[in-house]
Amino acid sequence: MRFKSGCIIGIFGLFVVSLGGWFFVIGISLLTSFALLELFRMAEYTGIKPATKTTLFSCVIIILSTYLEVIGIIEKEISNAILPISSIAICTWLLLQPKPGKISDIATSIFGLFYLGLLPSYWIKLRELENLFNNPNYNGNFFSSLDNFSGFKVTLITCLLIVSSDIGSYFIGKKYGKRALSSISPGKTIEGLIGGISCSILTGIIFSNLFSWENSILIGIFFGVLVSLMGLVGDLIESMMKRDAKLKDSGNLLPGHGGMLDRIDSYIFTPSLIYYTILVIDSFKIF
View 1 (tube, rainbow, N blue to C red):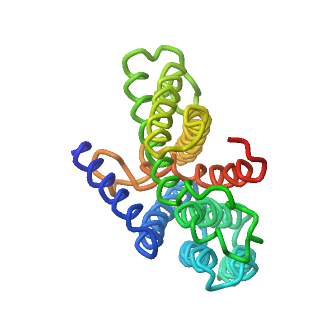
View 2 (tube, rainbow, N blue to C red):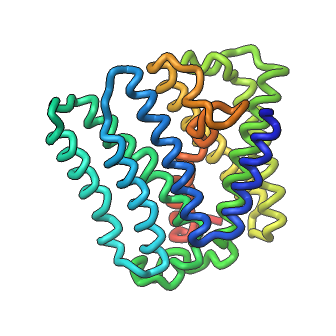
């Protein structure tokens, strides 16, 4: 069942990444919406009462506005305004409840907005890199020399690096793991971390060559390490939240994998860092 669920998730991911556009936007919106509901369900186990509906709506609006921004339909300032306005709306909703909200209710709601609204929206920016080449919102300077770094290629390789890191860390850790990596997730080992990074680097080098990127070995090593570490951070953050809620899984939506948040935790922190890393690479002509 775990293998079957994993294949379905993988096929769905490849499908929406390949299609891009509104298919990708809707796919990201659906995944993050399910994950947000699981996050707030975990929070409720600890006595917190977040603004679920308001935050869920705001997260979807952030993702949709990001796409409208990168394709040039709305101004960057309008898109940037969604986050602070949504934060105000969430706080106002909590203020108007019969029973006043607590600091933890506000903090969890705003964190959910950032964690599963703003951060996943960077997947849209990665996938739509081509639309930023001539977008006046970006002053025409960014991405000027990255024609070969198409949105599809960058998004695909980032996803593949996360998958390969997860697979490498699981199998290497299971066979050779002896030294615990963190008390937050006792099952993770230093050996597993090394295995995950190694597999991520190997995948990065292979696909950098397939994509005919210059300095493919350096790019493969650099992005392999970066993505693997960011995936680990995302995984540990979610483990920390589950530990606090005293739950094994964030949910039971995916047989053999737990909840949606369990499946996408490694994908949350990665896109923003990759996006800004590409900006730095382009600005300083590092590779």
